[in-house]
Image 1 (cartoon, one colour):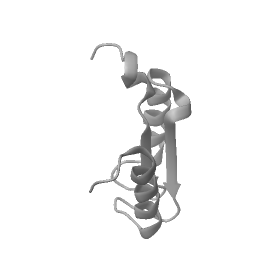
Image 2 (cartoon, one colour; image 1 turned 30 degrees about the vertical axis):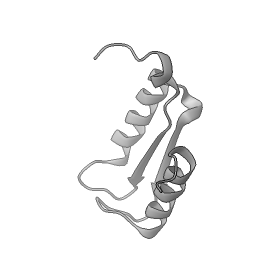
Image 3 (cartoon, helix red, strand yellow; image 1 turned 180 degrees about the horizontal axis):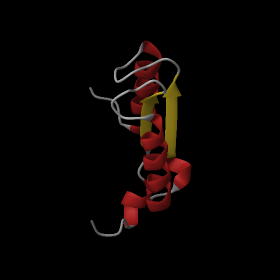
Image 4 (cartoon, rainbow, N blue to C red; image 1 turned 90 degrees about the vertical axis):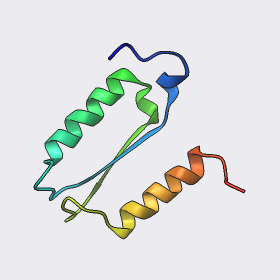
Length: 77
């Protein structure tokens, strides 16, 4: 609830959303990403949408998540 400061302002965020989600409309995802960008470094916020995807996942989304993890987290031995 408090302000975001320090290293947390530089956290990387990947938000994914299907453009056909009947449970959480795309508009809410868009509003959420704009709120995030106002709280942390907007350059570190990535918003991906997936055509035809409902409240589920798809191969393209999973590949985007894998790339995000590979880029931002250290490898596990």
